[in-house]
Image (tube, rainbow over all chains, first blue to last red; front, side):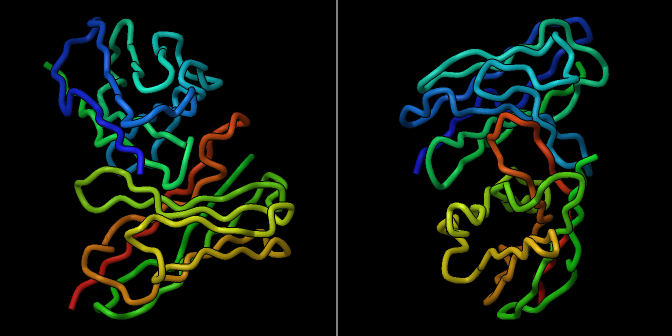
Length: 107
Length: 120
């Protein structure tokens, strides 16, 4: 199975900050990776697909990069509604695997 | 508008069974692969399994943690996806989500989730 190691597991930041979350795959997944945002009591919402493509309707302050085994999600200027938990998902091979999540909290 | 609506959750004893339906609307259900994902209380997301479409013979994939106990099926005539869960364990307690073709480029759609609690 492909392990997705996500870091950091939690992060405190302020409105306006730039933040970066990283996912590292235990073996190459090409660009078969998505980034999800989840708020309490809600289903996850995909922000980025194919590692770097912005989902329709998602603000441009979100961006993704990487290929193979190293991926990053960057939020260029944090907004109050961005405080949530973020997950990566590899869908290159079965079983699909999520990172363990990054909880983004207000400083 | 694409909609996915899970139901069937509830309290079940260890060793018991439960069947979760997911009703789909707003898209051509029969064309798509479908996935189940779960989330234990205060924990992360775990992919449970997938069923492919008719063109791919409705074949399935499962996470190791549920293989042999859970079965994913679908009824394209009813635009419905199912998760049959047998031999349930306390560690299967989670919110279960159905999702349309995780990873596909044509949009990302999830249901609202249904809570399954496995407890004596």
